[in-house]
Length: 329
Image (cartoon, rainbow, N blue to C red; front, side, top):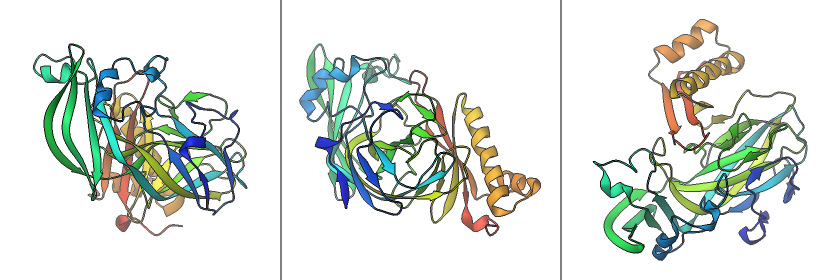
């Protein structure tokens, strides 16, 4: 099986159609990509908390975060097609890292939550399906001070950033979002999910990175349990048809994504795009689609990402369980 290892990935910080492909694959061919964590591997030990305020990747605008492996050229894909990306597996590194800094939204400058105004780093060990967090390292008066944590949470690995090259723009790996994908931090982009992404270039030019070991809804303080990862994928294509924005499908549900601010705009966009999907692929009338969203308990809104960071928008998924849908047309 073809593989791009981390040491030879040539990590990218822009999603750009000018980049030369690092790999070429056929439709249906499985391949493996090694990815770096969101902080570009800067925090690997508790002592690295000393560099929370001045790590090298912070000295750029925007930061050189969320490095991507790619692009991967998928033969047989043309502009105007929809790429289907099958996530076969996401393997985590032996550890992950999460952190926050003074001023981080929403509580990094709060008097009530004064402990959270200190630069804090937590290393998580991967152990039997859990992430084990023994202690937090805080930066206090230039010294690294440990504080006991003693938490375990369930591993739920997924791909935080996945995209094809936009038609004309060059977007950064940390702030780029659009119909072509990007940094969306959607925990449903996980093994067993199929992504539908509109394509703008020959070969699609697929980028992957920013694997998370686990994350709660909204990515509350802007950082998940970030991990190096090994991702197994294969791709198919829907010829001469473009979806309007990234869509997800698994064995249980379909999910229409949208990125926007304010939050209600992202909710409306995702929901209306889901209605169009129901009409086009499931034969629903406008009234049927409206009712399925309005009164159906199998319809839900997922707020995946709501980080207040520069121009990054909020990511919402409008999801409906397949058990309540008409048969596809």
